[in-house]
Image (cartoon, rainbow, N blue to C red; front, side):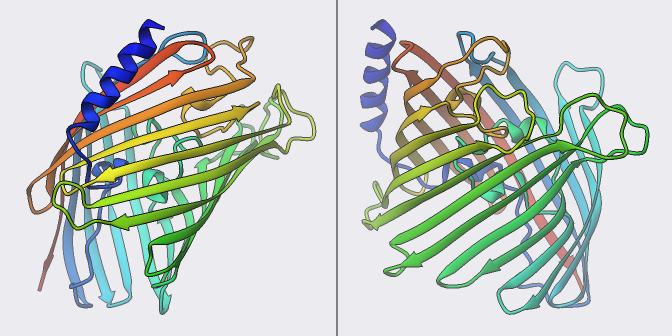
Length: 368
């Protein structure tokens, strides 16, 4: 019970500080601002994030790792007409202390608003954390270890409804390759009611390993997660506590493989929480309860299947999560963030946590 007492003491200590501003992961979002840019313009967009994230995870479920490094993404932007953007650039990720660049990827993308509220993205899409998945479905660490998502994306954004439908072709194969193709697909949808105080949400993500032209002995596997839930937001207007948001979700996970090596065919979970926020900080407290839960892209701490020991399972999951983010805009397009996140595994009496720091530069300049 020692870890539990430390957890409770820490939670009530940070609760006394107050609430927070941005949605927890938004300090990592690259943004591309074109609302005021007229057609037939050329610009330069630069995204740079310098980060530290230290995972202190224990037990047989997953191992701790420290991500420390920089991401740089310079792009040239061309707007031949108002409703079309073409971007070409480079994405680089470097972990400090390594003797090589971890990722070096060209960036090519076209974004076309073909109807009011409808936008089609082809090439490098608005992916990773910008999908705004729940953490049990899509873990934050994907931001540090996965390359930019490439594929096709359809976005719909109106006053009442938002939808993000995408296909991410993560690994391309040639005839004779010994590895498998990896394809991710998903849907994130929100319908707003009562002046956006209440949103009805649906999320799904599918991960597929396969291929017909490769020489791999690996099994063709597919797994899907589907989640539905309600978010209720209450605006308070105080500079110390501007917003309270309540969330309640149900999640289903299914192994779609005809012959697979997953220990479970189906699982489920409930996920509920509250977030307090103001302009500079955000505090989140959540409860997760799952049975046979698995999510190929989800945060490891929620899962029943170990990521490091294939013999280790935690059929029943019952944990309390808390997150604290301090966020400060240094200047327009430049921000710094500090976070602490903890997970108390009730059944295993285990306390896992992570903490981090990041400084991001996010600028787009157009020329006449």
